[in-house]
Image 1 (cartoon, one colour):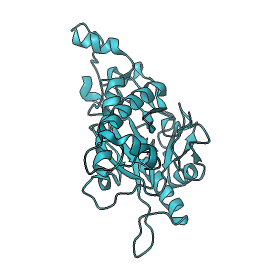
Image 2 (cartoon, helix red, strand yellow):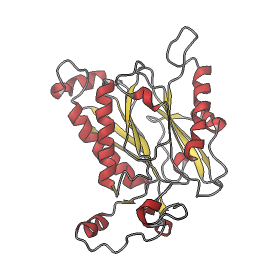
Image 3 (cartoon, helix red, strand yellow):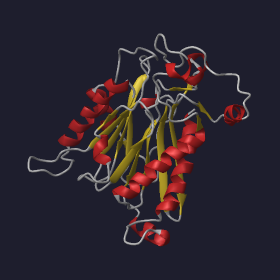
Image 4 (tube, one colour):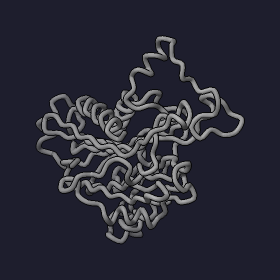
Length: 316
């Protein structure tokens, strides 16, 4: 699927044999971003700088990777790629690329001793293509190569996850979701939620669940999951508004995954606003908060919920 947001580029590095990889989003100059973590076991790089009170507002790239915390090394290759291109936050010593990394746990798939490294991240950045010109790859590719879902009842219930993409628009404003789904929970299965609510669910795990460690039982034995991703809009937003958009991304995840945000998940979303649709966004901004730029943030949050929900389901 193509993403009609000017300046956004997406690239992948995929290791089919080891079942791991990384996905890189390169943003146009001036992109503002924030993010939120709701899972209990996140693996992140430079995530704190996304907080609205931090000085740096721009985001140059987002790296989504397999390999758990080891895979965060892929971001180093993206930093070097951007530095060579003279892209980054201006300092007296030269531009410093602002690159955030999010990683998921896929070490039990394929060859867990092989994890994305800096060279792999650089390959993904070098091969990134404009999303307005070429469809973004989905499924078992990039960071989603070793992704699985449905493990909260044990690994025998696991099925493939992967990368999902969705684009929604309203009033001339676009919101796109790029999500790598490696959730403990089930995707697109309302029957399970209903059975739990009715007290008739018979699938509770008895022994260690997904990647459970010795001696732990039931849901406490869950290990190694995480859904990570980005919502990107061409609206012009502040960091505070981007944080609200990231929160809504998690709501979209919760609509598609049951149960979401487990302690064994490291669920994290980055919300990025490129501001590349200034004219259309001005027309769509009638409901915007007084004194704040861009389109109606509540409208964008509705779009984000819908985009992430659809992207998660498409990934599986």
